[in-house]
Image 1 (tube, protein in one colour):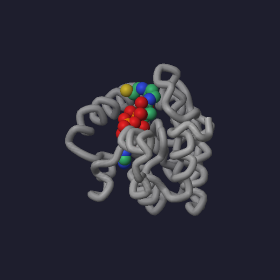
Image 2 (image 1 turned 90 degrees about the vertical axis):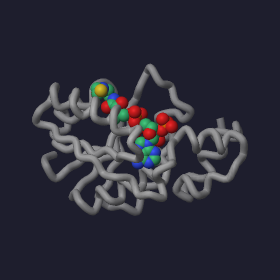
Image 3 (image 1 turned 135 degrees about the vertical axis):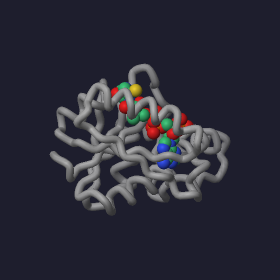
Image 4 (image 1 turned 135 degrees about the horizontal axis):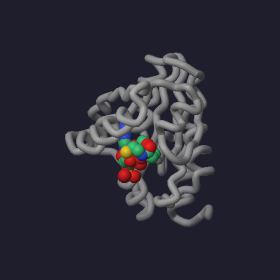
Length: 164
Ligand code: COA
């Protein structure tokens, strides 16, 4: 891997249209995009890592230069292991800035060879988050505006307990 590859890391619990906005735009800028799901033992999540990976693979199937992977431990270690040099993150609102700024600084301190690039989330996705999707789906609300159509049933079934 090289400068041609960017890594878009996150929890993706589950992937939303907001994430897809960033992935699709990154795929136009980089020859290869790796969407990397963090396996975080401290944060179990509502979906198993397998389910998150499957949903991401379905949602990204039409994007030829997008690959889905997973990692544990430090993001910079994953970057060094794979040789990728660019991390892409989306910024939705001012409230994202502080966390993202801290993460980018810490990562830069540990790995000056890795660059973090920020993309502004499209306005129509600015209010979206995975927890909003989870909450609405749990109460059987309509999430069709918020998640890619191909994973709609997966999300609903898992969160309403039809497919545990
Ligand atoms: N559109 C919609 N929602 C978005 C979004 C977008 N463009 N970007 C982020 N979000 C939402 C997510 O859905 C998630 O919502 P939730 O909190 O309601 O579930 C929230 O923003 C944060 O999600 P995510 O982007 O997955 O970030 P994260 O904080 O879970 O994970 C990592 C960030 C994985 C990059 C970071 O934790 C990491 O690198 N960890 C590895 C350990 C490490 O290296 N630490 C050192 C760095 S400090």
